[in-house]
Length: 293
Image (cartoon, rainbow, N blue to C red; front, side, top):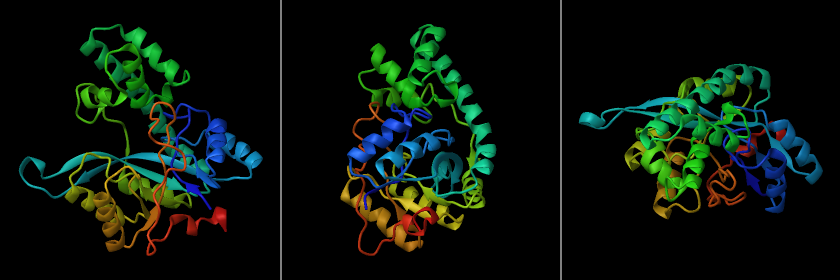
């Protein structure tokens, strides 16, 4: 059974509609897929309808933006406030989940506009022109606007040489055009997922620009707050990074999750089905999914 429990569609910052994501997942040989758009479940029904045609299983999924303050460190680095992404998987109470996430969706639209305002000043370009281009990338939906859409627009305009450069120079945390997103605390996010009948997974723990010590601390604190699983690092990351995460997962009695974090053409290096392989000692979160029982 081939599994991918982390991907995105046009309902957040992906470039393909849910139907196309599912078709591509089927072509990649995937049997079980979770569509995990940012703070929204709007694409799940379309994905499930497409999956029925391909005899695939769709797991209810969402990627929730959560605030968390990491303790530890010294001097000016004593604590670090971060937006941490927590995947909610296999939940059943979609109404309860939607009611809480609606507020976050509304904040995404405001955030996208504020980032665009900062960029228009930094680059001395028309706000209206830039915002309209960003909206086109987001399918006309301001609530779906993510930094990836904005980075793509900057790249296509020639303001940066690559989408990644847009993040490095303007969009990443604490860069000149960065705007913090309204978020639940990580504890609240985990509690919400559990209250909706799902499993809480720490997404891509090594992608938050943290030192190795702080990555381990993040995994520890996620476990202490009641998290269920940790996503394994991408296959492109060093073996040493994978081993570090494996040790932390084992130490804190978490199970594992795997996902490509596929976004489509704006991040072509992330491919559906390109997921890590578990070690013999590791257990997959999907073994506890009611949807697969």
